[in-house]
Image 1: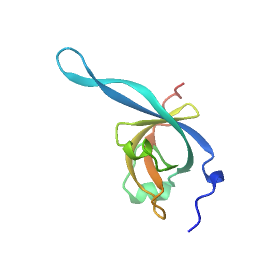
Image 2: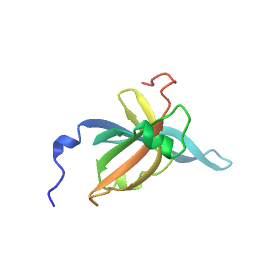
Image 3: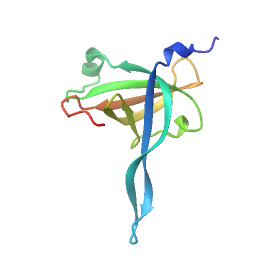
Length: 117
């Protein structure tokens, strides 16, 4: 099979995660910090697909596809993707449907909330 064309990955995203810190009493989640940037393909989930899945909240579900590498293989729920001022909470990840060299990241954003910097 041919490699995916570089043109598919036309969105620059930043990947954020909150590390664990010791507050003197316990280990707690620290503030979000950027852990990397990657080129990605962005696809918003269609409303019909969301209805079949039983979702009814005012959330925008988006899938970002990125090349698989040491960073992108560690992305799990709790990570955050930022793109064009919108913050997307990661809800799940999986290997690409057709290829193992990509990771699909499913995210949720609230369109009724103000954009973040």
